[in-house]
Length: 94
Image (cartoon, rainbow, N blue to C red):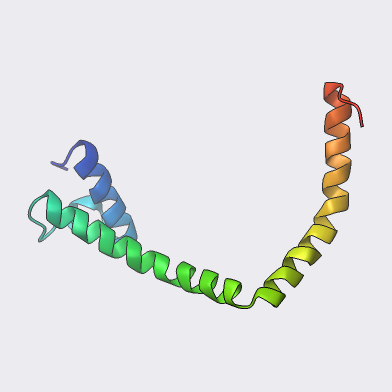
């Protein structure tokens, strides 16, 4: 691959998101600006479902809080034992 440094990394990213080798991801692109634009476009599209899922989660605050509380109730006792053992191992009190 002819690209080096930053352009090479962008080509690898672009190729990974397109499912193509970096060399093929550069096909048809001319210049650093075109490469940057192409990478930005694939990243925005890749993140779109994650952004939607996040928006859906925070939109239903009561359900979100209930899930967080249930998780805390489950994790609390487990974490408490782990923290206690870690404190004892490093000589901290209570």
